[in-house]
Amino acid sequence: MKFRDCSPYTYANILKALRVFYRDYLGKPEIIEGFKFPNRPFKPKKIPSKNELQEFYKFLKEPLAKAIFLIYATTGLRRKEVLSLKIGDVDFEKRMIIPEKDSSRTKMSWITFYNDEAEEALREYLGSFDALEKNRNLFPISEAYFKKRCKAFERKTGIRITPQILREWFACEMGRLGVPDRYVDAFCGRVPGSVLARHYTDFSPEKLKEIYDKANLKVLS
Image (cartoon, rainbow, N blue to C red):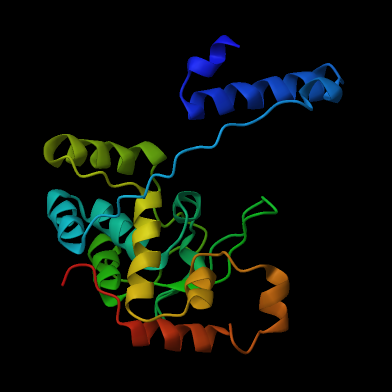
């Protein structure tokens, strides 16, 4: 098959498209039984250093951009979760966020927190936390707003920053600070709801805040 000259990623994507076509549109799943997907070579992910994140922070000009960056870096939230946050999803007194549930069955959210650096950035962006409209979006911008600044920074420095990379940095940094994997997974919304229900005491908001605060996560220092 001439497609075998393609890269493993391209070849696998072609097979996926053919699988959907034959199975779902033609109703002939037997045709795809012999499809063999290529092994994709392992590529270790490049996680930026704290110094590189600090460089990105200095590159950002607007208080809004700085606040979004620090929320991504200190909460472990997904891009969609951050962009869909309402003011009412944030407990400013406890620095706690309860993101809206994702509609996908494979993704869920519990609660997470942000650090004092993000709190200061939010205050600079929002002003007072009092009398804010709870139904208002915390960050009333499109995905392109933050993406544009990430791309400009990459062109200038060669350092790639994305919401997903910041989520991965958060997980790695919390692990380095001694936070057990099960709690990192909880902050990142990777713990099944059934587990949270069975072990509520271990994953209670009070316990998670204790774990988060003890880690003393820092981005800018």
